[in-house]
Structures are given as structure tokens and as C-alpha cells.
Amino acid sequence: MLKHVRNLGLRIGEFDAPSFDTKEIAASLNILHEYFGANSSSVRPHPNEDIIRDEIRSIAPKIAELADLLVETLESSHSGIFIPKFKLDTFDVESRKLVLYALTLCMGHPSATDQVDNRIIWDIKARDEFLKASHVPTYSEHANEAELHTDTQYHPEPERYLILYFIRQANCGGGTSILRDFNSIKQNMRQSTEGAWAVDYLENTDLPFQVPTSFTSNQRTDSVEVTIAPIFGTFPSIRYRRDTLKRGLKARTEFDTSETRHAISLLEKELQNTELLVKNVCSSDGFFMLNNHEALHGRESFTDRERYAVRIRISNKKC
Image 1 (tube, rainbow, N blue to C red):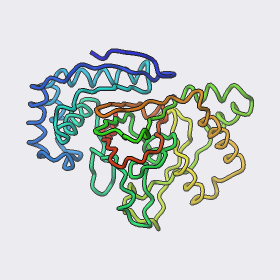
Image 2 (image 1 turned 90 degrees about the vertical axis):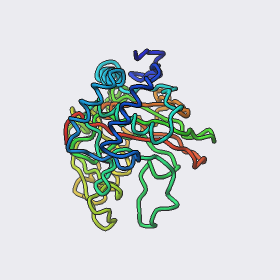
Image 3 (image 1 turned 180 degrees about the vertical axis):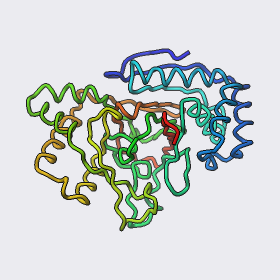
Image 4 (image 1 turned 180 degrees about the horizontal axis):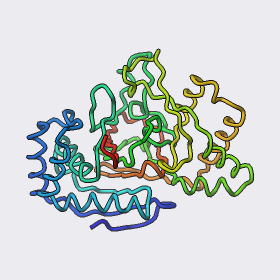
């Protein structure tokens, strides 16, 4: 059902998936409309999540099977999966979003993106011109380059998986997705004595990651929240985002040592190694799924402000 097409890099591959069953989609939408209505923005963590999941799995076995295969692949052979045509583009946008929610619900526990609105389905659009001057935009809110990072690195336990579905690609030629598997990063760094030291240091040193304004409990720029954790670990294997770490070190200066700065600089040097960087263009109706504990992802900048993607994060633990 999930067919491997080619390797794009270490543990990152392109796959093909069959078309969705229209009867399963119709039945799934009927269930989700009963719980949430037809507007995807109303989808939030639900007290009857387990019941909804069982209902979806019962009436949509092909959707459930695809969900299981995607998770199985990300827990075994790959950390990143690209599917160029997900075959959802014959449905309206709201229906597509709800189908994606049904799919991710079969994978685990789709999580709320922010602590204020508790939205699960997050639109990724350039909207920085609408934000307050004091607001620090996230990668999902601007059109600039998104450097290699893991999502929710500022959470004590970041979500295990994330999906991105592209409703409209950037027609300017920008917005290309970039990825690195954590194994390729550590293996390459360990080729030198200095790099091996940095890996060991980043495995054994806790560092502060500042929570972005959009995802703090009060969304106030004068209130700093941080999570203390190592960059290289076990669960997750890697957590990193340069700007949240930089702001965390500024807020918690006791962690800002010369050794820390040197180790981070060596990691950054490796992340800029273009020979091992995986680049892939996600066209409209393209699908991308990542093991957020085992790979870094990002994107190149774009100018087409009509670029439109949808993101859902999935935890394998119930919140």
C-alpha cells in the first residue's frame, strides 16, 4: 500500500500511496462533522478522542492501514517520507484538512499547536505583516528561510511525528524543503576529534530552549519560558533550533559558557554541510511526514505569499 520509490538521502525517501477511498472519506467526514462541525479550525483535543479514533478505524480501514504503514516506516527504515501526490486535491480544502486529521488520529494523538486556541490543524502561511511589532514570528508565520530544526524542541517531550500537506506550492521557485537525519549529523561529526568532543558534550549538557511567543501560556513578550534539555538524547534523539536556543542562552546566562558556544558552532558547521543536505520540492497536493525525534527539517525562503501548507503534530503519548 505504501510503495518505496527512491532514496533521497540517509533514511529519507520518496514513496507512493494509493488513492483514498471516497466512501471511506465520506464516512470519516460524517463522523468528524458530528464531533467538530465542518470547519477544521474547530478541531481541538477531544475528551472522546479514543472513541473517535475507534470509529474512524472501523469505517475507514484503508486510512487506518496507511496510518499504520507510515508510522511503521518511521519507526524502522526512515526518518522522513515524501509522497509527491497524496491524491486529496479533488476534495475541498476543509475536507482535506479533516481527512488529514482522521489519518493522524489513527497514528496516535494529534496535539494542540498553541496553548491559547488549542488548534490541532495549523495553517502555514506567510502572515508576518499582520502580526504585532513586538511579536516574534515562528517559521510557520513568515516567508524567510527556516533553518534546520526539530519542532517543539521547547517542549519537555516534543511530539514524535509531524505531517505537512501542501495545498498550494510556492510558484516563485522557493520554499524547498530541507532535511537531515540525526544519524548523518552525528556520524559525520564523529569523523574528527573535535567533532566527536562536540557530540559527547551536547549529549551530556542540558541547555535552555526558549518557548516562542505564539506558544507560551500568556503570549507576552515580557515573560520568558524555557525548557532545559540536551541537544542529543534518547527520547528524542535530537532537539534543536538555533534561534530558540540562542534566546534561551540569553535569558539563562548561567548556561552560556565558552564550551557550549564552541560545541554549538561545530554543530552549526555540520548543519551547513550541503553535501549531506536533502532538498525536495513539495508540489501542491504533496505530503511529507517526519520522525521529529530523529530528523531536522527546514525550508528555503520564498516570495510567493500564496504558498499554503497544513501541519499536524502527533504524539505517541496521550497528553
